[in-house]
Image (cartoon, rainbow, N blue to C red; front, side, top):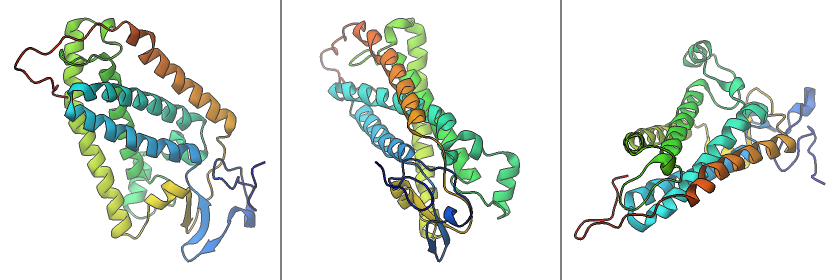
Length: 263
């Protein structure tokens, strides 16, 4: 049995249940109460996505035989993005899109220093949504893309050559947008950590953070997790399973030409 802390939250940081009054604050620090900001599934998603995106970018730049790993990393990103979309509806309170969507009013309040939320601030929320949208676009176009040399996405046979060419072009362009968003994200984290003394990295590792106000995340239990994982797994199977088996044989590179795609 998972041990419970005084607020009724599972001590492994997996899920939080509503807590009120004195029980809502697990511990007091100089910055205020210590609350569970990020649940365990969200943290696992975040760091898994970091690894998958890094692998896809590096292998895409290497090309050649590394494109097989590039495709696997792409399928992993498909599953992770679908999981995050499901968890954004079924997960714990701070993970739900409806609780941190950056409305104009929330952005104005944040810029005026009047925002009092816990979790993603409005600008951070906009960054998260933009990253998910770009990753979804990259993963989806990659499934249909082909470099005509070393690799074709698992769903490439399902579309015409002309459409595959257009999707491949989008895939190549969007990687630059993705890298730009990642760079902005890293710079924002560094700014908050080094200038504003607001550590954003440790809470994404431990789940816990000392805040002057706010409550721990709650909801998003094991049934919600199971449903989210099953949905993501089904999408990955559909995207890379039977379609991948029907992929045409790769055409060898012409003599004297490099077998490295421009992905």
